[in-house]
Amino acid sequence: VALDGYKTWSAVLPVEKEKATALDKILLVPKKWQVDRILGGPFENIIPIPDSGYLLLTKASSGAEAVAYSYKNDTGIPLFAESDVVKESTITGVSIAPGSSDIIVRMETPGDKKIFWVKLFQDKTVVKDVTELLSSVSQNLRWTGQAPGQVFFLAGGEITKIDLEAGA
Image 1 (tube, rainbow, N blue to C red):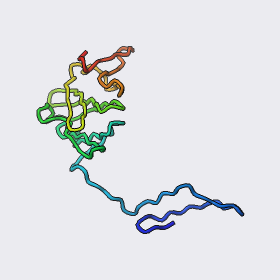
Image 2 (image 1 turned 30 degrees about the vertical axis):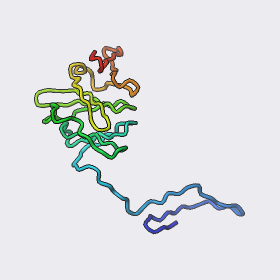
Image 3 (image 1 turned 135 degrees about the horizontal axis):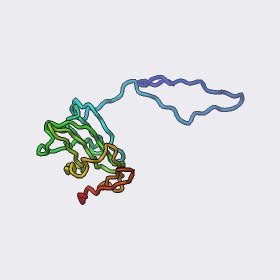
Image 4 (image 1 turned 90 degrees about the horizontal axis):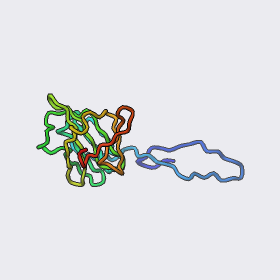
């Protein structure tokens, strides 16, 4: 099958005497794809935030240049406001709650390590420093979109919960 502007499609089809051969669907692939440049870079990492409508974009793991891109609204918002302590920091880890637009971001600043809980909204982010609560927690903390303010992890073989909203 050939169509102008598309790559030719071909396949070997079984043919039986006195029977029709039908195809349910075929996919014609364009020779050239339309590409829309949506945000200036150079970004080095793209991290999908499942079921949230956002992608987390980072430049050289720099916290100061992290952007939450909403593919639903086609907009990007800075993850951290200029007032946050992230100017000379690097992102060392990200934990995502599936089904939620909340993120936990681990960062290293000169001489310090920080952990932030970031809540993404349509036009802004709300950032809470949760370093004191989570500094002793392993990198493998887990949480769920049904309870994004609660973090679960194993400590000494026991399941432990921290409520980020309450700070305990």
